[in-house]
Amino acid sequence: MSKTVLIIGGGIAGLCTAITLQQIGMNVKVFEKSTEPAVAGAGIIIAPNALEALNPYRISDEIIRKGHPSDGFNILTDRGRLITQLAIPPGYGNLYSIHRKDLHHILLSALPPGTIEWGKQFLHLEQKDNHVQVTFSDGSQAVGDLVVAADGIHSNIRKQTLKEDIYRYAGYTCWRGVISVDGLPGLSHRFIETWGTKGRFGIVPLPKDKVYWYALINARQGDSHVANYSVEDLQRLFQNYHDPIPSLLLKMASHDMIHRDIVDITPMERFYSDRVVFIGDAAHAITPNMGQGACQAIEDAHILAECLRVQSDYQGAFADYDARRRRRIKLISKQSWRTGQMAQLENFLFTSVRNRLMKYAPKRIYRNQAQRLYKFQLKG
Image (cartoon, rainbow, N blue to C red):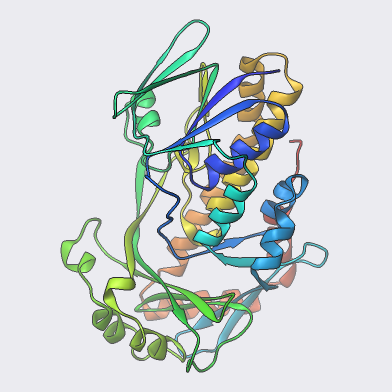
């Protein structure tokens, strides 16, 4: 099937889709609203399932080479006591942390020059009998056989197509940042996440002597007071947490923090509409509690390309893609939502019971969950 495919969005989902579709011989063009390849963000974790999905495209080796490996997460109390270890099962490899801009560079390097047009803000699209026409805010237009909507959680293509609001506020808000490891006590090669009554704090080592950190606290959606928190506010909030959390925040500057409320979307009833197919956050934005947002977008890209390769028409390919992805996306979305609610408990009694149940839960429960999460399967 030789088609011209217009990909709206040049983030991880869009770039991975461009790579996979070019591999099956499609004419691909990516349109990104940013004027240059400068990526805002902090760290990102690429799990074994995403590495497996990227393996045929010679990208996994580069992520492994440039990323920081870990065999799992330690979940700690605010005093630093171990609640449980969420380990990667034997035979599945490692998690790899990498700065988002470095991952973006790896993906860009895998695409031929001229694949991406920068400074193209999507305005609207029209689906015709035999093509799709996309108009951008600068007045320019593009015509293709198919459109891949990879324009993120606030997808304008989805809003134009779906019309209804499918956003869900998770009940908590998040700050993120990257900082040097110099002078920080108590760091481990393993990723850690601390669950306390004042909030949750994650520390993820990165290459080049950096760490990616994130802090989550319960708050009303859009609370302007909370949104304007300085690093000093976070220091006061987490001052009694174990090292290196207080030391890390003392090294941080307010202007280097990224803040956003945590929102997901209920997965779309169908991941396509005639000649338009949705992938990544545009189709099924997931709360970040499983570290699977980008990973599921990468799986999307692989499966979509496989469906388009084997199906003789795009309608059948899109229907097959939807069928293959829907159950897995719903399960991970639901599990991530529940994990967030459990991790954000504030009541001391409830958190004590939670911690004890997690500490003494049979290890096979975590192992089975991890195997389902980290096993990438082309079929099913």
